[in-house]
Image (cartoon, rainbow over all chains, first blue to last red):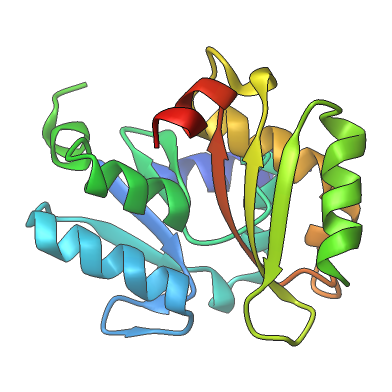
Amino acid sequence: MTDELRKRIADTIGRGRVMLFMKGNPAMPQCGFSAAVVGILKQTGVPFESYNILADQELREGLKVYSSWPTFPQLYVDGKLIGGADIVRDLHAKGELQQLLTAQA
Amino acid sequence: MSPDEISARIRTAIPDANVSVRDTTGGGDHFDATVVSAAFAGKGPVERHRLVYAALSDVINGPAAPIHALALTTATPDEYQRK
């Protein structure tokens, strides 16, 4: 991976405290797993930013390598990977997601 | 890709793993897997998923990868028993 791409990925992750890389956008998710995470985030009421990886093939492939995570969606909080749909759903079910999203880094 | 092929790969990478894989759509590309292994002890959910993804790296990465989606549940034997 080029340094330029690595920096672009880091900058994109840093666009929001709660940053979701997904297929499509929150209004029109292009995948059931992305839709599920959007739905959960909306339930928490915590504002989040999103990035449509379907519209950026370079970043899509780069982010998989950058984070050693081959699938989307990917949720980041304060720059740290929280996980994909399974983990977000699990944290939400255990009541741990809200705190994780609102805790100050 | 068949559920058995996926199970075999995971067991090769994580020998003590108890693996069950289900083809969720019957199309051979969307799967649901539960992996139970002592190797997950002391690891957070992200590290656990990475271990499993690493076992499948050649079939889950890239636009032509046979696995399009994998819903993953991980547990240690203790956690699994308590469920």
